[in-house]
Each structure stands twice: as C-alpha cells, then as structure tokens.
Image 1 (cartoon, one colour):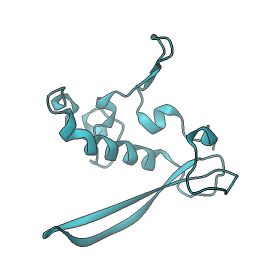
Image 2: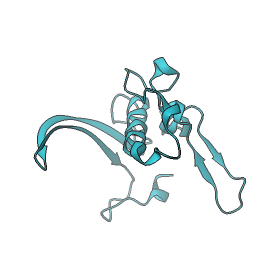
Image 3: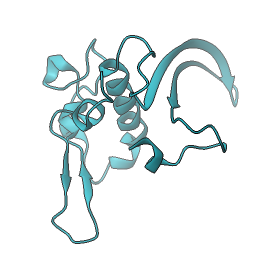
Image 4: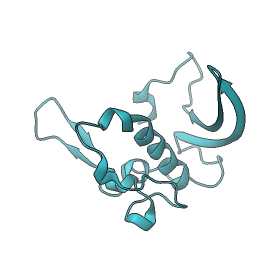
Length: 131
C-alpha cells in the first residue's frame, strides 16, 4: 500500500486551494470529521456529532476535537500493521490509563503518531523528508 492520500488523512472532500499566489491553503471539510452515520468519514461513532455547530465564534473550543478527529481518521484509514515502509506516518493505539491532572481525575487515551524516514539523524523529522 502506498502512503495514505490527502483524502484518507484529512477527509473525502479535502482540497488544496492555490488561487492566491504564494499562499496555498489546505481546505478541510469539517463534515468529513463527523461520524459515518452522520455523513462523515470516521467510523464507530467516534467522529464529531454535528460539525455545523462549529463556527467563527466557537472555533477555538473545537481545536482539540478537530485535531483528535483528524488523528482518528488517519488511524482508521491506515494499514492494519506497520510493515509498509511507504506509509510515512503510522498511528498506534497506546491504550488508556487513569490519572490525575491538577486534582482532576481523568482518563488518558493514547494515540501515538510515529513518523518514518530512511535517514535516522536528528531528533525530529523534517516534513519535507516525508513527501
């Protein structure tokens, strides 16, 4: 399997807008981040329930939910094992654990994203090396 497509990582209706010179934009359709039973791309009831409630006024409170939905989408679309060297980002389900953060009991759900490249130098991977 070759690396995941833009649509597999960001939703069926994702586009690249190059209409403004020197300022291309990635356009993610929030409806794609909804659960598949609500017309989105995310399976198992894990997507955003109703993306139409996200607007310019409340967008910041949705930032973490949007990022998590994108990670879930990639996780669900990737191969079932991590044996394909052409898949540059692979997400592993690290399970969950109970913890306390500032006296608040919470459950941590670990989704671990790993980036792969052939050169092992440095502590970080330059995104250009993944394309």
